[in-house]
Image 1 (cartoon, rainbow, N blue to C red):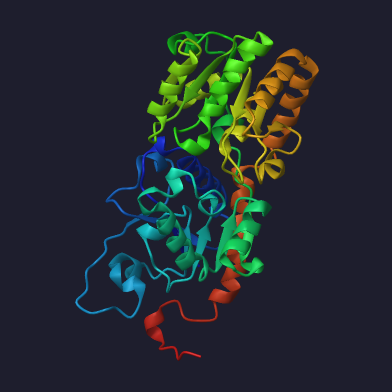
Image 2: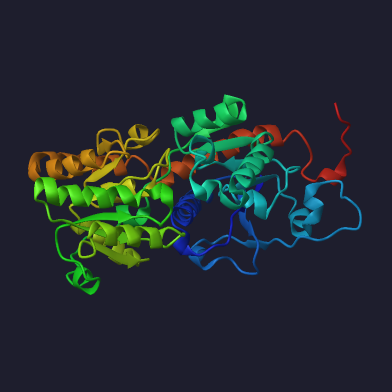
Length: 395
């Protein structure tokens, strides 16, 4: 089959979404030569995004035409799509259905989470029509998708429950541990922490500043660590501001934690690796699941993990992390103290984490995805490659 991989063209600071696309395409490139399918990238913009410079696939630019009369198919709005004569479109990012809303060519959909259904009170999934936008997109896309890819079994069940699609069309493929963490140069970078203004003895949280990331819990945890346990740890925060950083800074001032919270913004990959490796622990109190990349990165880099016990966390992390209720800062402070004072526990979590990180690789994901392409090819071969060769009669 000729398969168009539809992506969105955003910058690397968007976070886990970019990491996901990079990992999947890198894994696919390693396996594509042995596949009987051909691939190209599809998206808006004249050039392939810079974050995909290492992906050796032809780029197809989407240009929507305004037609005088309604077309016979969605694809006619996009002349490049018609010329390419794709057998299948694979949407790697949920929002790419907005980039290329074509439903008359068979397609695979990706769903990372349905938190707008599970926790619709968070402003980032409700404000400015965001809930309706997500709901409308998923309703249009999922009902007609040839295949839907979920991040794990918990995610699969949510898709089936909320959007009433046949379970047979939903396939759970675990998100891969980012290769930069698995293949990292572990030689010590003595300059990184001083350059970033960080001393030893810190907890690390790489997350963009959205309310659901639950930074506030970590501030309350820091306060309790000092007052109740005599632990004077610092908290290092990386990530872009998505609207909530002013509030977090305000709370830091109210709690008197100005000297204990360090903002370092968006950091380079080498700096990120060092931040993981030197941390006392990754603290990951996000309310959103069913999976997340930072725990996998921490696993690979030998950083013990304390994470939210949300739906999907047990499936992703098993016994390689301490899973804690994300509403109770006192439990987080106790988990940190336990990890600090029990060296055997720390060594156990690090060992289990490294083993867990190797369980999810980009090559494994690509292999599973190619298998789904092969399965669908058995259905796609039942009609001509170009729809203008035959006029179908509706049932």
